[in-house]
Length: 479
Ligand code: 4AD
Ligand code: MG
Image (tube, rainbow, N blue to C red; front, side, top):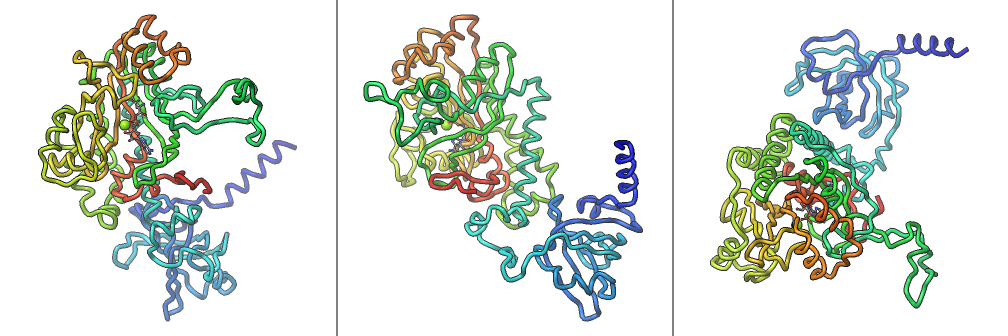
């Protein structure tokens, strides 16, 4: 019975032709008697001579393949009205070199099937160009536009290159938990995770009784995998995480998401200089990779989104990042004649406007600012000998500002304990983190790269909401 079924399927498979992706068809050097192409109709044009020209895209590449349908084709009479912009079709035909301009190969249809129609009156992607704001409202259809197809292919390639970069250097890929009890950045910007009845939570002495919550204590979505990453770096030497992180900060800007992906390498025996070296090498590697491997999509961004994209990326790959201390950065900002919304003095956090000014206008390339005041940085960063600054570093790039934040970690038990307390955090909750400083403590460093900021910079897209498939931002989690 079962073997008969398998046999049947084999026969069926032999009979049905294999579909070829459009990317492969467009790159074909030779004509082919019969190919099968499947995809979504981007445009249809009818000629007086009794032909329809369909531009078909299947997302395998930016380019469409042109299919020419002779109106005398049997199926055409029946399917004519169903072949509209947005419909999904399967076309069998002869692959021939195109005589038209700009097309290498085209398909002369010999058979035609419509999988799904798209009503011309109601299909939202009729026009050639739509605003990104409008497209955000139709997140289920926007991947069928040129821009979003290109963004997602480049995003995917960057993810691959990230794994390749670390794998080539002997880093172990580590998955850290999403549900956590600790606030890595100590900033209190966490989304709570609970199964308690919010209308009637259990209480003891007027306070919510988290002992009755799902995990038996208060839990949240992680803001960073760093603390857990440190555990493994102090056993495996070099690890990296690459996963979703969540921040409940109310920042409605073009560079902030409430849910974003972060890449966090953590290395034993690295000091801050080693950390900065790795960050610089990493960014250059990723930019060089997309320039080499996403040429068609990158050309598209360069033409349609930002005309300086290719040149900027190449310039960054070819030049050294500028490294300067926080004190030097403040000094340069104080000296500047530029008017800033936020004034600067030693001790203040650098705002996006300051970061951009320094990298965009002063140095005209990525910069790494290091040795920040202890008071404005997280508790885990290593205190410098001056007692005032910590071994923190931020990589700032033109147009975007901060793309990477990292530091050497405090490996001294007593100093770490004091900094935890000073930050208002409870040493009891971080007992395991302190323990790492009691048993075989090692100097170590790491950083976090915001994956969407990376994609944003590489593609030249203005808004971070347009480089993640489904953006989550304040008041927006629908789809
Ligand atoms: O500077 P951050 O907060 O650093 C950390 O979380 C450290 N634990 C990293 C580490 O040392 N392992 O965040 C790191 C990066 C930022 O530089 C930025 O690129 C990105 O994460 N980022 C965001 N991206 C999008 N939306 C947000 N709301 C972001 N917040 C941070
Ligand atoms: Mg930061």
